[in-house]
Image (cartoon, rainbow, N blue to C red):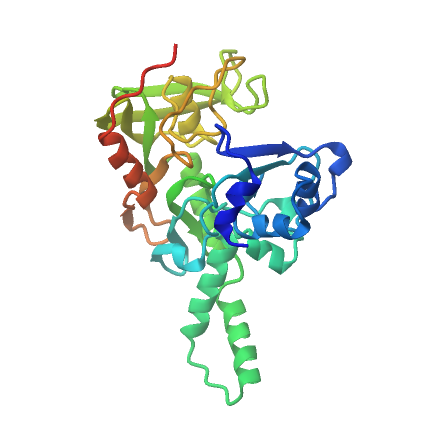
Length: 358
């Protein structure tokens, strides 16, 4: 069955996807078994093809593993159109590298670190849902192996020698900050314990220069957004608190780069670096990031309509600057806007502004 014929299996509705919440009685079921239950008109073969052809997500992540075991509360999304292919090693651009650290340009759609509960997964399953730390480690180990000068006389000896060289050259990475899965752009990781021990306090003291580009709803003027963020604002989501003495101080400086009909392309400079800080601040200011899936509504309120059509939240880590923790050299890097963000901006430039919701 061709991928395009899946449209007939899922009736077209106003929604672009159908969500299924995994109940307690289905905990431990495979992804294929759950889809067979919620769509009994589909055969096992059709369900597996649907999964393998990138129509299905689990908890927001593309899943092409029909044997994936589900937990109660997981959200399985089935899209009407196939999603983008999984990230490949060639999609990860190494911008700078030395023996102490590496700067990469992360594509959107790639989780930074493997969740603890997923680390026991077999290698095949982890490859179906790759993470930046695991992919980058393999890339760097391959580079280390090819840089060697060992010339064994047999294939078996060559493999053994290369593996030893890889293990000697690099055993692990030391992430010092994260980017959300759907945020693209520059990210810094330490390669040595010495660099890691010095970079962590640099981030804590806000000595790392970070600038993001965000495409948001509405017209935004230059301003500073400041609040105290808590892990749970009252509905399970992170957000700002008005209670004295609670939360962590968060400061985001925003500056308009371009006004579009009904939207603004913003430059966001982080003074602090709290989890989801930019997305929360902009949503609370009434200017949600286009494509936002989590911070879409005020506490107890209704979701904000998003007519942009963005498939992910339009946030890109465009600049990264810091003093090298070992050499003291000043390093500054820039990343161009990704193609999907450029295409959306170009489309919005030429369309009339949307009528604000009443």
